[in-house]
Image (cartoon, rainbow, N blue to C red; front, side, top):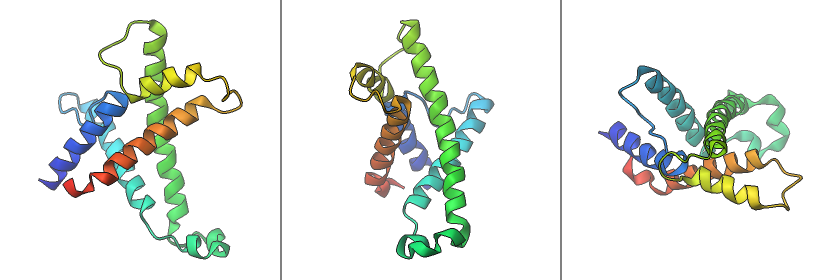
Length: 147
């Protein structure tokens, strides 16, 4: 039951952020992709709340005690890959001019960041991905009692 509530919560979050389902039981390919996302997402949340020795004692960072920094980099790479894929899908949808369904948070961010001229020296894609990820993390942590 705990896993079911977790899946439902993540389904709602991803529906809002990228207009996707977290678990799609019809397609096995999508289910495997969802498993990879779920594992990366769970690891991300665990690592964001984990005590890291180098946070308290920065001079020990080079040792990477417990391999936490290596795990963080691997997880960040996996999540960035998924977000990049979703962002490209949204850009293609926007470029085609035919909106499919409702607009989601990523569509909103794309339209807002396209209008902003002051961010010309910043990577707009990174801003979009980071904002969507932070929105999702914030929503998940505030509704953690469900799990």
